[in-house]
Image (cartoon, rainbow, N blue to C red; front, side, top):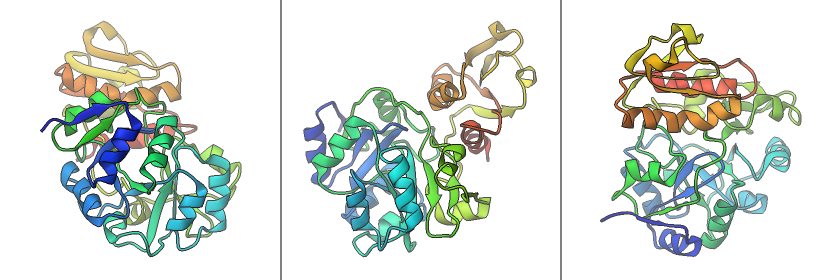
Amino acid sequence: MKTLCTSDVERAAAVLRSGALVAFPTETVYGLGADALDAAAVASIFAAKGRPADNPLITHVASVVEARLLADVLPEAAETLLHAFAPGPLTVIVPRGPRVPDAVTAGLDTVGLRIPAHPMAQHFLQACARPVAAPSANRSGRPSPTTAAAVLEDMDGRIACVLDGGPTDAGVESTVVDCTTDPPVLLRHGACTVEALRTVCPALRVSSSAEQQARSPGTRYRHYAPQARVVPVAHPGAAAPGAQHAYIGRHAPPAPEAFGLVAVCDTQAAYAHRLFDFFRQADRAGCCVIFAERAPAEGLGPTINDRVARAAAG
């Protein structure tokens, strides 16, 4: 059965309330949503994606009031960060309340909560009238989708519905911060930068790899990988030209005409926005290698470098 693609929010919400899966847009990437309080519906996310069952999910809610209903308690750091950055591309890890099924948290005693800013996502969550568990709406390990068409590339026939809200804005996932520790710990770089977070939480610490894999969604396995081999490069001159080679970065490579596909991004925000879509474009063009320029270690640079490194792993 083909997947329904619609821009009708109420129709998509009715599909989710029936226990089926609905992909929906956020300001970061498209999420693959299920009723977070329905363990069977949540389990179907893992089956549709081919996602390992020990990889926890983020739960999306429309407001801080709804977030409080899912947490055992919202730590002070979570309240501070949500007040400053929600709705927005931030996920807070907090003690899990009794309403949240094990399937959402992979058995952890914590849950990741996010309040998306995308207007259609907000409308969708309100129409669903329940929390929505949602990882990115792609097959496990593939680049996260930033358009409804990209969702369908991976998930057509595997899920009931895609709510089409056009291209996403940020193009990379939310930042994940563990608020159960003092000081809070950044577990996954994302669309909300470390510098921005530290304006309200100066003591924020960036985690080690082991901490990330133990507690954060989206960090345990190879992620974001196209079919082409991804090769990080320190500068454009290290990218080898070729008709089946692609290149993306802030600066143009020597002889860009010798590459099969090139994307030069004016800003780090443009680089982050373009990255996953470029990976999919390179696959459609038949490229066998994608060279990705490493970004400076500030702003969105760590997020870009994290996604490139994870895509290149394995």
